[in-house]
Image (tube, rainbow, N blue to C red; front, top):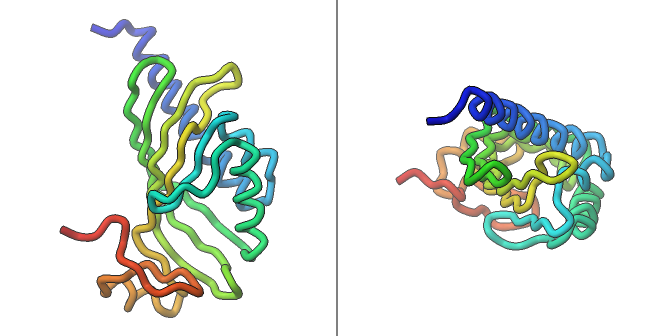
Length: 168
């Protein structure tokens, strides 16, 4: 049986993970690359739909910076974080969020889930691995139709794709 102190610490850990997610989103939206980097461990990895984009904190910051060069205004809105703790210093998370962004001159609306792994460091909880999985995304005027399609992922410049979370 867990002690009251252990249970309180787990609640504090969950709150710190929620704060980490919000700080990361605000750093992205504000082009705060120091804040983006501070969200990750030194050896962290970042992937999209299972494909590795960057390995190491500096490479992740470079990847995000380069990606943002093609973006206008962005709004990352977290909705939930579902955390599973492996021990006092390691956890996994599934973070659901909506994205509003301008990419390649087009305003887009989408929903994603971040499949994360976290580790407690001397600076607090940090992301060890992040894999952004897309549920749907499309230009604002196409969202209704794209969500009715078997290919609701409509990033500009590439052919429509199926969702990383298709209905079964």
